Length: 121
Image (cartoon, rainbow, N blue to C red; front, top):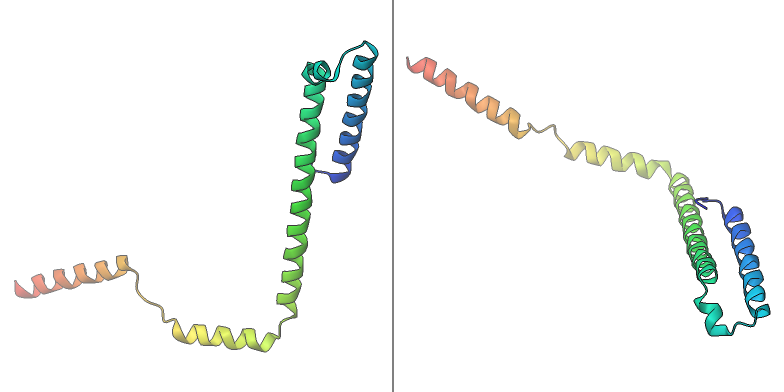
């Protein structure tokens, strides 16, 4: 039952509900009361599987909704005017100058220290 397909989960849910109804009918045919039916192990197991299935169906619905929202936002981004994007990039490139990393700065300092020591001697 590890299917991510909505159709498969719906079919499984219907099958489990059918099995549950058959089991309840069997137990009532044997003369069991509702409290004894609720305590029956098979009935409890079937109800648990139905609950898990419902939870999975809601998760699948949430995933599909999220995917739809992402596709809408992506389409909106692609539909945005191209000129604004180009202007933003040029402004960002102007601001960003290639700065030396801390490691490169330390290397430069050490090199300068060695040169100054060598000049002193």
